[in-house]
Length: 186
Image 1: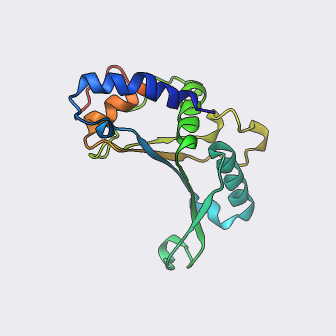
Image 2: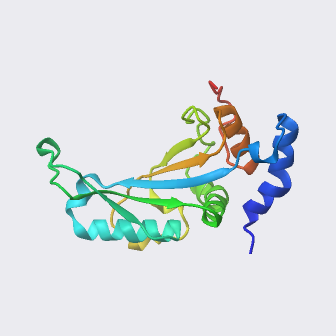
């Protein structure tokens, strides 16, 4: 079964991007490569109950298993010991990219209070878009009763575009709501 957003990409995004720019080859048209979802644990890394709940929440959001990132060496100033969990991450590829971004655009982002769009200046110079969410409760899969601690989530949308302008036009046509009264410095 083809994802709805992937169908939109093939039917609407490719023709629009082809007429906006003069790509010689269809393989030059930017596309979504992967989505990386991160969560730093901070002080919660020492509490195994919060670590397990964060892992289960991110597993539900991403519909994929989670990788626990561990510290490489001990840092006394931050009270971190060697090989202790410091964060969790998920990398989505292929069909799961489109399913996650479709849920993000249509279900999660509209649930943010006073949401006016995401910042279009959060590109990294190579067409990849990074942004953070303050809490996990905006995803409808997460039940309010099961949450033990509110934690932020960092999302990185990696594209095959070479410039920020190409990445912005790709994500804009896909439907990511950018702020309207924002002057991007691209």
